[in-house]
Amino acid sequence: MSFSADPLAPPRRPVLRITRAGGEEQVIVCPGPALGCAQWIGLIPEDATQILLAAAPSARLDRVERRSEASVFLACAWRKPGNALAALWARAKGQSRRYRDIVRGGVAVTRRQHFAAWAATRRVPFEGPVPSLTIRCIVLAHGAASETLERTLATVRAQTLAAETVALTDLSVGSPSDLLSDAAALCVLHAGDALEPDAFALLAASLGGADLAYADEVDADGAPRLKPDWSPDLARATGYVGRVALVSRALIERLPNEPLGSVTEAADTLGRLVAEACRRAVHCPRPLATVAATPSYSAREVAWPLPDPAPLVSVIIPSRDRLDLISTVSRGLLEATDYPAIELIVVDNGSTDPAVLAYYEKLKRDSRVQIVSFPQAFNFSAMVNAGVAAASGQVVVLLNNDIGVRGPGWLGAMVRQAIRPEVGAVGAKLLFGDGTLQHAGVVVGLAGRAGHILRRRPADTPGHLGRLHVAHEVSAVTAACLAVSRDKYLAVGGFDAEAFPIDFNDVDFCLRLGAKGWKTIWTPEAELFHFESVSRGPSVGAKRERFEREAALFTARWLDVIRHDPFYHPALSLTTFGEDLE
Image (cartoon, rainbow, N blue to C red; front, side):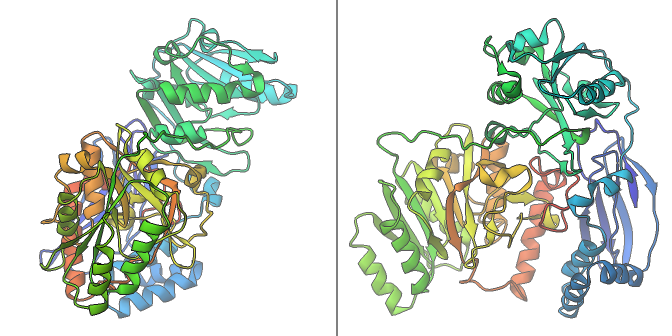
C-alpha cells in the first residue's frame, strides 16, 4: 500500500483498523509519509471482515496491491534468513503478532545507510503556494574554494522562494541582528551545502508564528540526519538543529547583540544562542539539504545545579522474596551511592522466605529504611503508589528490585534533572547483565504500542544524532529506574493501578505528566544494571492475556502519541528497534 500527504500536514502515521470475524479489532500503525510518500506491507488476517484506513485529511491512498503470504515470507527468507527462522518459531508458538512483525522486519525495513535509494521512491516535491517571506541567507565561506562556494550559491539562486544572499569570508562575524539586517528570517549555511529547490518555501510555510523552523539533512556521505521535533535539551547539548533552518526576526531580537566570533565558530555560537532562547520551533520532517560536512558542534552535557542541602529522596522498591535481588539493590543504594539524603522504602508483596524476612529486620536497623507491607495480589502500580504515600522525600525514585548500582553518582544525576521546574519523569541508562543496552528511552508506537529503542546494542552506542551521549527529551522512560518530584507525581494521580496494574503504567504515567506540561528526560549520567523482570518471568498464558488487555487500553488512550512520538522521526521504523527506515 502506498499513500502520500501534504508535507505541511502534521506528521501523523496512518492507522489501519482491521476487524476480524470474531469481533476482535487489530490496530496497525503504518509508516509516516515524511518525504511526501510512504509504503506499507504487512499481513492481513484471513478472517478479516473490514479494513479501515485513518489518515490525515490531506492524505491520498495511491496504490493497493495484494501479495500472497508465501511470497512475502520467501522475500523475508531471501533478504534476512534469520528473520525467517525466528518468524517460523514464533508462528509455531502461536505468537501471531510477533510472527507478523518479524516478517515485516525482514521485508519492509531498510538500513539507514541505504537512505538514498529508499528516499528516491518516496520523495514528493512541494507543490503548495510559496509564502511571502523575506529571507537573508548567510553563507560562511572562510577558506572555501571558489567552486565550493559557487555550488552553494547556485542552489540558493535556484530556490522557489528567493532570498538575499551574502557570503562571508572575513575572520569575524557580527551580531545576529547584523546578519539578519532588514529581513524577516535568517538562514546560515556553510560553503558546500546544497539546498533542495523547495527548501526555503517549505521552511517559510512551516515557520508561521514560530521562532524557528528546521528540516532534516543528508551528510556528504549520504547518511540522513533525521531529527526529532523540538527538543531543547538535545539542541543545547548537540546543536542537532543544524544548518537547514530559518530563525525568525522575533527570536533574533531576543539574542545578545554581540559578535558571534570567527567565521569558523559563528554557526555553532548562533546555534547555542538559538537553542537557549527559542520558545517555539517547528520541525519539517524531510531532508532539505545535503551538508558539506557533519556539523562540528561538539556534544556537551549541561550541568544542572543541585541545591545545598540536597533534597531528601525517597527510593521505592517493590519486592517479594528473592534475597539475592533485594540485598543487592539495597546495598547498592545504601552503601555504594554517594547521594547524601536517602530514604529507602521497600514495598513488600507478601514475602515468605525466612531469609528475606530476616534481612528486612536487619534493614530496619537503619533509620533511613522502612518496610511497607502490601499483602494484596501483585499490582505494580498499586505498590509504587503505596510507597509514594509513605514517602517523605521531595523527590521519589521508583527502583526495581532487579537493579544493580554501577557507580556512586547515578542518583545525584537524576535528582538534578527531576527538580527542574519543566521536568516531570527522569530515566536512567540501564544495561543488561552482559553490558548491552536495555533502556535508552521509550519510543511510543514502537512495536505498535511502546518499546525500548536500541536494545542489546553495545553500551557505548551513540544513537542517531549522538543523542545517547547526552541527556535529552523522550516521550517516556521505564519505571525500573524513574525519578520524579513527589508533588508532580501526586498532581497526575500517580500510577493508574486500575487500567495498568502490571504493564504500560510507566509510559502512561510519563504521558500524563507530558499532558500537564512536564517533559520526560533520559540521562546517560545515571547508569545502572537491570536484570529485566527476572523476578516475574515471561508473559505467557493468562499473563499474556492480561498484557494484551492492558495493551489495548494503552492503545485506545494514547493512539495520537502512538501515531507520532515527537522525539522519533516519522520515517523511522516502528517494527524494529534499531532506528531503521520503514
